[in-house]
Amino acid sequence: MMIVDSFKQASQKAENFAQKKQLREAVITAETLLSNHPHSQINTWANKILTVLSKEISRA
Image 1 (tube, helix red, strand yellow):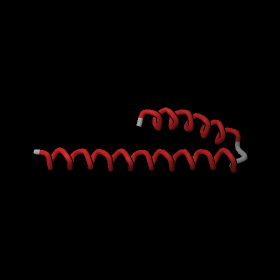
Image 2 (cartoon, rainbow, N blue to C red):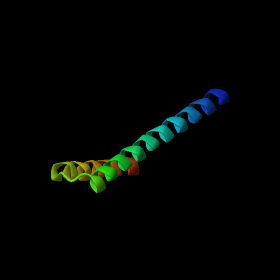
Image 3 (tube, one colour):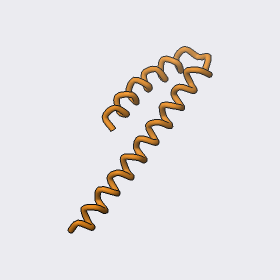
Image 4 (cartoon, one colour):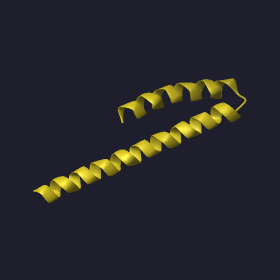
C-alpha cells in the first residue's frame, strides 16, 4: 500500500506543479499585455485577470 500512496503523492505534486506553471505563464501573458498593448479595454481586462490569477496562485 505504501507504493501506491507514494505514487499518488508524486502524481499530485506533479499536477500541482503543472497547474502553478500554467498560472505563472498566464500571469506573464497578462503582464505583457499590460505593458505592451495601447488599448485601454485590453489593459482593463488584463488587470482583472491578474487579480483572479493572483488569488488562484495563492490558493495553489
